[in-house]
Image: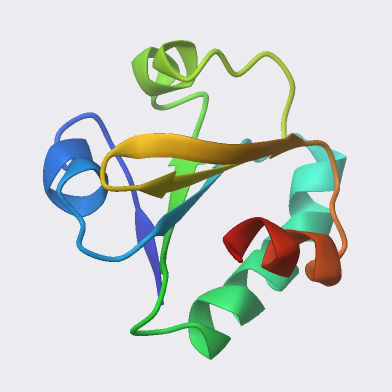
Length: 102
């Protein structure tokens, strides 16, 4: 299941998460974001209980986007124990996203 990540729930959902977190920085007007969205949703289902998947709308959460230095979207960020371990910018096929999570 995907969760909407905001400045308000970031610490509880992401920083203090016991599982790795895949953050998808996106916007409604972004074509590649719409292409990657269903893939991210599929990963959220398949990896439920192993990986938490969070969606960050960059238009609604500019502070979070700035904190992660997101300049292009979609940007995927993998966090473990509150630290960024991997990131990818632009459209990614499912295999590449799964590789980020390994």
